[in-house]
Figure 1: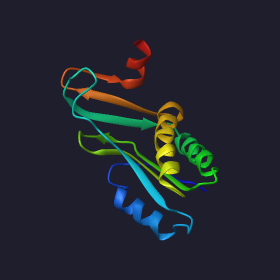
Figure 2: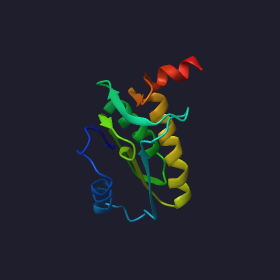
Figure 3: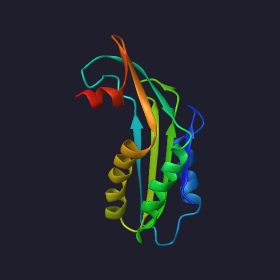
Figure 4: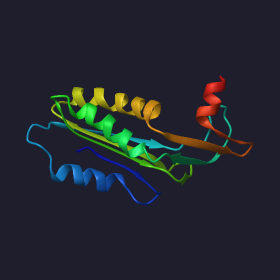
Length: 145
């Protein structure tokens, strides 16, 4: 079963996830890669960001499990971990951790952007961006453009 989760700020950390992954690493694993999503201090429009507020539906964990399981079915991928923070997060703080263990670095490097693209497109997780000038749900702003 894939290792995924939705957490409040402070409940999950990259060092803890990495240690957990390394404890049970398979003998065919030759690469481990990770992606850390960090809150930017400037919006797409150049406004200073005060914080992001992430929210999710009850089905978010199931969707993360499905995404991780799809990638874990690949013969050269051993483990996928996806852990998203759903809370108020300030610039510079971590919002998501994605870790992949696989046979070769090419397998791992290919999986990371695919995982993030699927999480952004498929997981019922939304973010509100609060800047010094305004606040808005990012998916609603993207739909208007």
